[in-house]
Image (cartoon, rainbow, N blue to C red):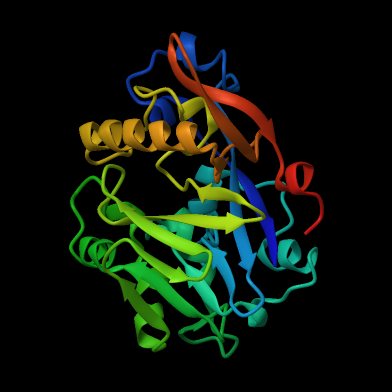
Length: 283
């Protein structure tokens, strides 16, 4: 059984957008920014190999968009999708299941690439089932005005056209040791995986808690379409994570791969930060 990170790249986004109503003089003490208010963020996926299934969660931006598109996010660092897999002896062809937390372009764009023939698209993971929540799929097919620009047809429709797409409709154990729950604050039907590994539960946080700085209940992104629901979902999750000593795997935190939770007089906060390898050793 193996569990390892796939550090695809880093990117930059405005700190104000990532921390919403939180004043800059507060969030910049926990998460640094440059003179243009841009913060460094990670595109960090995860692979769980239970000996039968080889499941990957999220796959980054991909490379289909033009230079202007990528100039806004300033991709840098990381190993690239294939390079990060190769680091652990895997290829895209080895992945049996691609679980996509939601269909915003930074989470699903790497699952589809331009066809080698020069026309159309092809799947980066040719042997994988692509899992998306039914709620999120329907949401993306009829997007609201706030999210519309985050749903790119070239990232999404080829999954269905390939015949590799399947839907998740409820909280389920998808495979032994790999459970998923649906959350609706950031976007409708966001999948959050709960992975049982060596006696611990590792939770892939996606955009429910994108970084350790977002653990504070009111520190939420302006991208959340239903912020009051995010607040409620986070409060319930953090209570459970604290009581059960979960390990939070942070998709977008450029400085901390994982953390645990403690409860203080000021609320929940990160207790310890570490990498999966530091905690479990090489898997």
